[in-house]
Figure 1 (cartoon, one colour):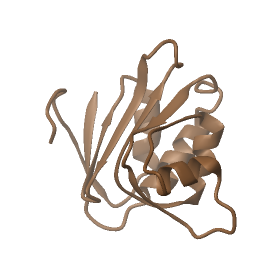
Figure 2 (cartoon, rainbow, N blue to C red; figure 1 turned 45 degrees about the horizontal axis):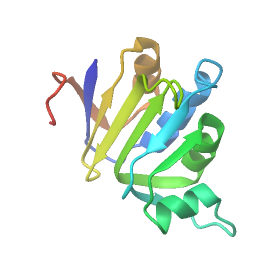
Figure 3 (cartoon, rainbow, N blue to C red; figure 1 turned 180 degrees about the vertical axis):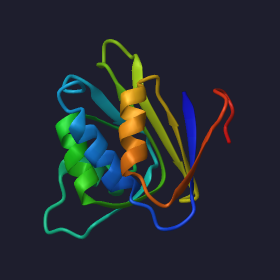
Length: 139
């Protein structure tokens, strides 16, 4: 299923994603989270940035982390402006469980066959207009 969330006002995407993934922490424990290179993400100012946060912010590098580290990153995020986040079963098995593309702070595309995760995100996400989009369409 592919869903488009158009941001109609200030959203809580990062918080909603964090809380949704935390709810499924047990099911996703062995998963790998990949953040594509050149992600435009704003973080809260902090005294000491994690190596993963530095890699994303300073180097604009692609990043692969486990779910607990990604949850820590989400906790420090202010806003995902342009980014692509993919949750896969493991490095060896590239089956994608959840795919999120945030485009220019105006909309996000979520693709997943896991209806429970999608429903949990829907419940937590505010400030958006939701619509289904056909797979393979960019907008």
